[in-house]
Image 1 (cartoon, rainbow, N blue to C red):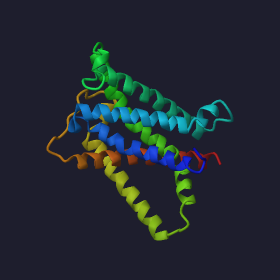
Image 2: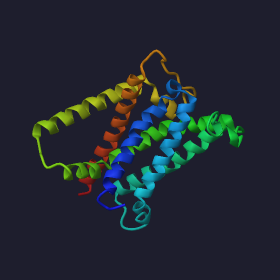
Image 3: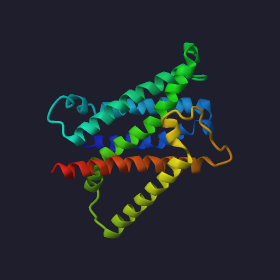
Image 4: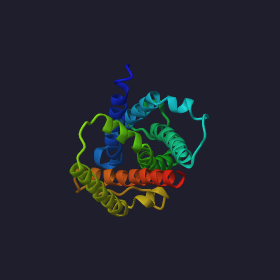
Length: 224
């Protein structure tokens, strides 16, 4: 693959993962079989993401670690562990795709791990996107020749509104209770359209992405 095509492929892979993540969180609304196949697709995309960004591993032990780099590396390593735990626990719980493995033992533990990894994966993946948001924005600016104050203001306004909705959705969906296992069973309103669920979870993802992005900007400013 040429270097010119690699950034576009990276963005396509990351974009596909952003789309899949809220769909995976809608487990009960989509059904078990669909959830398992989407989980396989997410794992494949995550592996491809790491293959495309393999230079990160080579540079992990090189250079000085600033506060921002330390935060980014810690988030990335936690996300890596989380994304290993998800498919492993998912295979153990499988009732459709991997039933031939007969990995039914330890179902209760696998279910707890899968619940925790799902919700912390949502947080960590969003933080990861926010911490690397500067590089993404630079790539987008490079591909755009026009600058518009009105467009910038509109995007910022939309981002703020999405973040505010993310706070509301985080509380309404009781996501904090799943992050800390205060609830071990996910309760969904089956009368609500899937689209509303996806919008809520995308807004929560945007909230944590903004937290990562502005935390990195603040830390850079403090150490500049």
